[in-house]
Image (cartoon, rainbow, N blue to C red; front, side, top):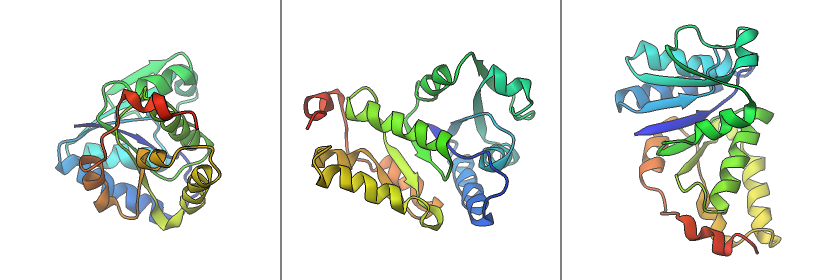
Length: 191
Protein backbone atom coordinates (compact mmCIF):
# COMPACT_ATOMS: atom_id res chain seq x y z
CA UNK A 1 0.00 0.00 0.00
CA UNK A 2 1.23 3.49 -0.86
CA UNK A 3 -0.19 6.42 1.12
CA UNK A 4 0.33 10.16 0.72
CA UNK A 5 0.43 12.18 3.93
CA UNK A 6 -0.25 15.92 4.03
CA UNK A 7 1.06 17.69 7.13
CA UNK A 8 2.65 20.81 8.60
CA UNK A 9 6.24 22.00 8.63
CA UNK A 10 5.74 24.25 11.67
CA UNK A 11 7.87 23.51 14.73
CA UNK A 12 5.89 25.72 17.14
CA UNK A 13 2.79 23.55 17.44
CA UNK A 14 1.44 21.56 20.39
CA UNK A 15 3.27 18.35 21.31
CA UNK A 16 0.08 16.30 20.82
CA UNK A 17 0.35 16.81 17.04
CA UNK A 18 3.90 15.42 17.08
CA UNK A 19 2.80 12.47 19.24
CA UNK A 20 -0.03 11.61 16.84
CA UNK A 21 2.34 11.84 13.87
CA UNK A 22 4.85 9.56 15.58
CA UNK A 23 2.16 6.95 16.33
CA UNK A 24 0.90 7.05 12.75
CA UNK A 25 4.42 6.74 11.33
CA UNK A 26 5.08 3.71 13.53
CA UNK A 27 1.80 2.12 12.36
CA UNK A 28 2.74 2.72 8.73
CA UNK A 29 6.26 1.33 9.16
CA UNK A 30 4.94 -1.78 10.95
CA UNK A 31 2.41 -2.37 8.15
CA UNK A 32 5.07 -1.92 5.41
CA UNK A 33 3.21 1.03 3.93
CA UNK A 34 5.17 3.19 1.51
CA UNK A 35 4.67 6.84 2.44
CA UNK A 36 4.76 9.85 0.12
CA UNK A 37 5.02 13.28 1.75
CA UNK A 38 6.12 16.87 1.18
CA UNK A 39 9.85 16.25 1.67
CA UNK A 40 10.37 18.65 4.57
CA UNK A 41 12.72 18.21 7.52
CA UNK A 42 10.83 20.16 10.18
CA UNK A 43 7.52 20.05 12.00
CA UNK A 44 5.19 17.12 11.42
CA UNK A 45 6.86 16.45 8.07
CA UNK A 46 10.21 15.98 9.76
CA UNK A 47 8.72 13.84 12.54
CA UNK A 48 6.92 11.63 10.00
CA UNK A 49 10.11 11.04 7.99
CA UNK A 50 12.32 10.53 11.04
CA UNK A 51 10.05 7.90 12.59
CA UNK A 52 9.44 6.07 9.30
CA UNK A 53 13.19 5.88 8.67
CA UNK A 54 14.02 4.92 12.28
CA UNK A 55 11.58 2.02 12.02
CA UNK A 56 12.83 0.69 8.68
CA UNK A 57 9.95 2.04 6.61
CA UNK A 58 9.93 3.53 3.12
CA UNK A 59 9.28 7.20 2.50
CA UNK A 60 9.45 9.37 -0.59
CA UNK A 61 9.63 13.15 -0.46
CA UNK A 62 8.33 15.47 -3.18
CA UNK A 63 9.46 19.05 -2.87
CA UNK A 64 9.85 22.03 -5.22
CA UNK A 65 13.41 22.99 -6.12
CA UNK A 66 13.01 26.46 -4.63
CA UNK A 67 12.32 24.92 -1.21
CA UNK A 68 15.42 22.78 -1.51
CA UNK A 69 17.45 25.90 -2.28
CA UNK A 70 16.62 27.21 1.20
CA UNK A 71 17.43 23.78 2.67
CA UNK A 72 13.91 22.68 3.61
CA UNK A 73 14.39 19.18 2.20
CA UNK A 74 15.00 16.31 4.65
CA UNK A 75 18.64 15.24 4.28
CA UNK A 76 18.05 11.62 5.34
CA UNK A 77 15.25 10.87 2.86
CA UNK A 78 17.11 9.27 -0.03
CA UNK A 79 14.06 9.01 -2.30
CA UNK A 80 13.50 12.72 -2.95
CA UNK A 81 11.87 14.08 -6.08
CA UNK A 82 12.28 17.75 -6.98
CA UNK A 83 9.59 19.57 -8.92
CA UNK A 84 9.61 22.90 -10.69
CA UNK A 85 6.39 24.19 -9.15
CA UNK A 86 3.95 23.68 -6.28
CA UNK A 87 1.31 22.66 -8.84
CA UNK A 88 3.54 19.89 -10.17
CA UNK A 89 4.26 18.76 -6.61
CA UNK A 90 0.55 18.45 -5.77
CA UNK A 91 -0.10 16.42 -8.93
CA UNK A 92 2.80 14.08 -8.09
CA UNK A 93 1.42 13.51 -4.58
CA UNK A 94 -1.65 11.82 -6.06
CA UNK A 95 0.13 9.61 -8.59
CA UNK A 96 0.04 5.85 -7.94
CA UNK A 97 -1.22 6.09 -4.36
CA UNK A 98 -3.83 3.98 -2.60
CA UNK A 99 -5.09 6.76 -0.35
CA UNK A 100 -4.19 9.92 1.45
CA UNK A 101 -4.13 11.11 5.03
CA UNK A 102 -4.30 14.72 6.18
CA UNK A 103 -2.68 15.52 9.50
CA UNK A 104 -2.96 18.95 11.08
CA UNK A 105 -1.49 21.76 9.03
CA UNK A 106 -1.82 25.28 7.76
CA UNK A 107 -2.77 26.72 4.40
CA UNK A 108 -0.50 24.39 2.42
CA UNK A 109 -2.04 21.29 3.98
CA UNK A 110 -5.55 22.70 3.56
CA UNK A 111 -4.90 23.60 -0.08
CA UNK A 112 -3.60 20.11 -0.85
CA UNK A 113 -6.54 18.52 0.95
CA UNK A 114 -9.13 20.67 -0.80
CA UNK A 115 -7.60 20.00 -4.21
CA UNK A 116 -7.83 16.25 -3.56
CA UNK A 117 -11.45 16.58 -2.36
CA UNK A 118 -12.32 18.65 -5.44
CA UNK A 119 -10.72 16.08 -7.76
CA UNK A 120 -12.59 13.32 -5.96
CA UNK A 121 -15.87 15.18 -6.35
CA UNK A 122 -15.20 15.29 -10.09
CA UNK A 123 -14.28 11.61 -10.24
CA UNK A 124 -10.66 12.36 -11.17
CA UNK A 125 -9.28 11.04 -7.88
CA UNK A 126 -11.07 8.03 -6.39
CA UNK A 127 -8.92 6.93 -3.44
CA UNK A 128 -9.74 7.16 0.29
CA UNK A 129 -9.18 10.50 2.05
CA UNK A 130 -8.71 10.21 5.82
CA UNK A 131 -8.49 13.31 8.01
CA UNK A 132 -6.81 12.77 11.39
CA UNK A 133 -8.61 15.12 13.77
CA UNK A 134 -5.98 15.35 16.52
CA UNK A 135 -7.00 17.63 19.37
CA UNK A 136 -10.25 18.41 17.47
CA UNK A 137 -8.18 20.50 15.07
CA UNK A 138 -10.41 19.80 12.10
CA UNK A 139 -13.78 20.25 13.85
CA UNK A 140 -14.43 23.58 12.07
CA UNK A 141 -13.61 21.97 8.72
CA UNK A 142 -16.02 19.12 9.40
CA UNK A 143 -18.77 21.63 10.21
CA UNK A 144 -18.01 23.64 7.06
CA UNK A 145 -18.08 20.59 4.80
CA UNK A 146 -21.38 19.48 6.31
CA UNK A 147 -22.73 22.98 5.76
CA UNK A 148 -21.70 22.80 2.10
CA UNK A 149 -24.12 19.89 1.85
CA UNK A 150 -26.92 21.30 4.04
CA UNK A 151 -26.87 24.57 2.06
CA UNK A 152 -27.01 22.58 -1.22
CA UNK A 153 -23.57 23.53 -2.52
CA UNK A 154 -22.77 19.82 -2.61
CA UNK A 155 -24.76 16.60 -2.81
CA UNK A 156 -25.27 14.50 0.32
CA UNK A 157 -23.30 11.70 -1.37
CA UNK A 158 -20.22 13.93 -1.19
CA UNK A 159 -20.04 13.30 2.55
CA UNK A 160 -18.65 9.87 1.61
CA UNK A 161 -15.55 11.40 0.00
CA UNK A 162 -13.65 11.69 3.28
CA UNK A 163 -13.56 10.18 6.72
CA UNK A 164 -12.59 11.94 9.95
CA UNK A 165 -10.85 9.86 12.63
CA UNK A 166 -9.75 10.94 16.10
CA UNK A 167 -6.74 8.65 16.73
CA UNK A 168 -3.74 7.56 14.64
CA UNK A 169 -4.64 3.94 15.41
CA UNK A 170 -7.89 4.40 13.45
CA UNK A 171 -6.25 5.57 10.22
CA UNK A 172 -5.33 2.20 8.69
CA UNK A 173 -8.78 0.76 9.29
CA UNK A 174 -10.36 3.88 7.78
CA UNK A 175 -8.14 3.60 4.69
CA UNK A 176 -8.93 -0.07 4.11
CA UNK A 177 -12.67 0.10 4.88
CA UNK A 178 -13.64 3.07 2.76
CA UNK A 179 -16.75 3.46 0.61
CA UNK A 180 -16.07 2.81 -3.08
CA UNK A 181 -15.81 5.94 -5.20
CA UNK A 182 -15.43 6.00 -8.96
CA UNK A 183 -15.27 8.20 -12.04
CA UNK A 184 -19.08 8.34 -12.23
CA UNK A 185 -19.02 10.91 -9.42
CA UNK A 186 -18.81 13.54 -12.15
CA UNK A 187 -22.50 12.89 -12.85
CA UNK A 188 -23.61 14.28 -9.49
CA UNK A 189 -20.72 16.73 -8.95
CA UNK A 190 -22.95 19.63 -9.84
CA UNK A 191 -25.80 20.14 -7.37
